[in-house]
Length: 332
Ligand SMILES: Cc1cc2nc3c(=O)[nH]c(=O)nc-3n(C[C@H](O)[C@H](O)[C@H](O)COP(=O)(O)O)c2cc1C
Image (cartoon, rainbow, N blue to C red; front, side, top):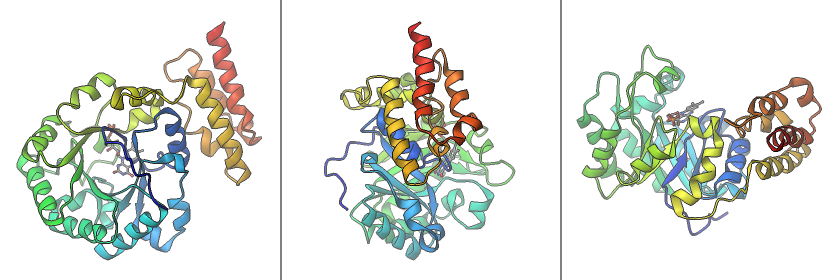
């Protein structure tokens, strides 16, 4: 399967999030924005090579532009996964060098790889050698007590020089490898956006995306003159309607969805198809709870779509009923 030829720029991306950015969420995000880059959850090389690859790799054609995020540190295994990603038609393959979880560290990948830029370069190079897709890296600005700008500058410099990697997605905080949970690691280490703009100034030829803490269009747009793109994580999940402005603001194109109701209808039709293939309704509704975030009736929408008794019926009509309840209330 070949990817679409005209890929948009990476002005905006939705971050890879384990358990959140699965194919059901990504289909939903695509009802809101056509051009924003989407990333899968991190998939480890072991899970892909020894598990059910199709379950991890399957996606709907509407999900382009789409990146597969890999977790691993063995060049040969990563190359095999990059080959698979290419066959399945992904547009980009991203290596996770930012995850601080202890489980990931024991596999010797994720954020601890920031201490080994030569190995990261070997991994990226092994992937590039087998694919014509963009091979990119997502990383932090430092690990543990290495908080100086020089550390991340040298990481990016070495990785680029040794592998030729052109695209760096920078989560603008340190990762603390011992003592903080992954969740705390997304909240406690301070955000240092200035490090990321400095990277762009020092490596103007590279594509640099900034990530961490973006919640409003004002903050996103303030970054566009500084760096090449912005990656949004939690806010794109909890407040997905934010993405409805992505295409007009980012690329000057009309938004695909005329309103929340149209998105609910598209998701009900999608749920019907997925349920016919054996997915439970909840696998889809859990990702759309934020659709009416901040609107009157948002609580009712969430309550109806997370009610175990209603979900048990596995009837996609529930999505329309919940939307009716909210929309009628708004109209009243
Ligand atoms: C539930 C959850 C799961 C995450 N899983 C991943 C992952 O699989 N790979 C990764 O690189 N980052 C992962 N992250 C980190 C995000 O990609 C992002 O870097 C982080 O949330 C900061 O961006 P934000 O402040 O916009 O959320 C995860 C974050 C969350 C909240």
